[in-house]
Structures are given as structure tokens and as C-alpha cells.
Amino acid sequence: MAIQRAIDEATRVGGGTVHLPAGTYAVSRAAPSAFAILLRSGVFLEGTGRSSVVKLQAGSGGHLINVTREANCGIRGMVLDGNRLEQPSLGHGFRSGGVDGLQLEDLLIVNAFHYGIGLEGGDNRGVVIRRVEIADCGGDGIDIKNKSNDNSIVTISDVSVRRWGLRTDSQTQAGIDCRGPVRLSGIRVSNPVADDAVGVRMRQGEIGDVNGLGAHNARLENFDVQMGNGRTQVGVDVVARSVVAANGTVSGGFRGLAVHASGFRANGVRVSGCSGSGILLNAHGSGLNADDAVLSNCTVTNCADDGIDVETNNVQILDCTSTGSGRYGLSVRETASGTVVIRGNFSRNRAGSFFNRGRNSRFAVSAP
Image (cartoon, rainbow, N blue to C red; front, side):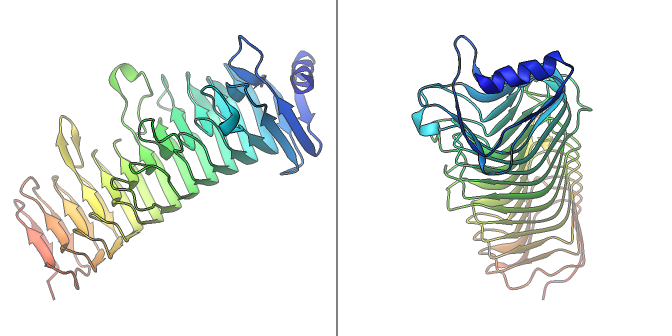
């Protein structure tokens, strides 16, 4: 295949850029490989924008582009089309099997059989993903699994994901699914397909770190997550420690923001229009408790259940607004202890401003 030969030749001479002029390039997986194109160290594949299209041929299967244990490489300025409806087997638009120094920039990734971008199969260090649009993929828009180095920060900026999780027979899919530390900014997620879809998910490390060490200390800022009418859809789901969410909006779905791990911080987050509670600080037990969370300058409006639901310990709620809820503006459950509420507006909720059965709660704000 011409593209692969050009990549291999660039590698042979020490690296360089392989240019793809405008046009559609049909590529196919060559058995027994699991991919159509293999990116190599020191090589950048670069198109002319959306007029350069790399498309997986019907019946090929596998990943469109793969990179495994390479360094300092990337893809810029093109469309990657996985041709999902014409494929017989699992594959991603782009897959990394562990890379040190990867740039994915100015891309449109569409019609992947499973993930739009799958960063998995080992450490992914020095990864930068920016100005990328992902649409119509079968699984997650972006899936991140860093397996052995929890200091490997992945940076994702100016990225949009829409219409993901088209494989509704599969497990819960996320617009962006993080099992490894990540910095997300300028994120837009919209139009999920499955009833149980998640917009952005920060996962804990799983048993034996099989699927990553967890998104502890990750940061999400300047985001807009628009969910649909799914029965259990969650806009932002946090199951990792010490995550920060700042300056973003979540609308629709069952729950806007669900937190299940300690040390969470939210500032300037706006949640609206959920069919359940807007923000849940959850108490699962077994180490999954949203203890020591801080919500500051957050707003919840027009959710069908409680605006803010607190089940955990030592939560601080500072200068927040929770109005228009179907039940209470703020509920503090029996499992909670040490909740502190300072200032804010919890008026105009159907059942009232506060429901408080927590221990040692302190409200430095009065109900209207």
C-alpha cells in the first residue's frame, strides 16, 4: 500500500512528514495484522484538511491506523473514516498501543466500529490531542488506559464528540473515558445514543490495573456536555480521587454530575434539566465515597429530583445556587456528616430549600 510504503521509507531515513494531497485513500487491513496503517517513530502523516480522507475499505475490519511502542509521531489535518457499517469486526479509528510523544491534531474521525481514539495497551506519554472532532462511533469517542505510569499526563483540548455508543449491545460507553491522568479543556460532548451513556467519565484503577491506574488528579475545564433523554445517562461521572471540574455546563440526561470518590473539587459548574438529581455526592462504601468534596460557585436549575444530593462526609458547598428542582434544592442524607453550606440561593424548589438529616451539618445560609 502506498501510504504504508511512504511511512516505512520515512522511518528508514530517520523520520519526516508523509503528505497526503486532497483525495480519498481507500486502505485495507492485511491479515494477520489488526490494522490498515502502522504509524512509526519520527513520522507524521499530514493531509490538507477535510479534503484528505483515509477510509477503511468495506470488509477490512481492524483498526484504521495503529501505533505500537513508538515515539515522536502523529497525524495532522485529515479525515479518518472507519466505514463502520461495512466492517465485519472490531476496530478503532486510531489506536495507540503505548507511545512516547504523540500528536493528533486537526482531525475529523468518523464511523469507527468501536472507539474513535483508543489510547491503550501500555503507557501513553506526552500525548496531545487538539482540534479534533469525533462522530458516529460504535463505542467511546476517546478511551484512555494508562497501565503502568500514573504520571503520564494526556492533554486533550478543543475536542468535540457527538453521536457515540452506536453499539448499544455493548457495555456503557462514554464520550470521553479516562483511566489514566488527563487534562481536558475546551470539550464539547453531545447527542449520546445509548440509554446508559456517560458524557465524560473519570475512572478509578481497576483490579490489578488491567485497564489503567485511574484518572486520579485529572482536570476537566471549559466544557459543555449535552445529554439526551436516556434513563440512566450521566453527564460527568467521577470515580477517581482528587478530580477538578471547572467552568463548564451539563444539561439533560438522568444526572448531571455524579461523584463517587474523595477530594473532588468543582468551581463554576452549571447543571440543568436532569430527570433525576442534578449533582450527587455518592456513598458506595468500599472506598468509593465522595468525602471531602468542595462545590463552589456552582448552579443547578430545573432538575426533576433534588438539585444537590449529599450522602458523604465533610462536604463544603460555597456560594452555590440550586433552584427549580422537583424536590429540594439541597438534600443532606443520613449517611452524611460535617456538611458545611455557606451563602448561596436554594429558593423556588417544589419541596423546599433544604432536607437535612445529616450529622453535624452547618448551614450559614437561611431558607427564604
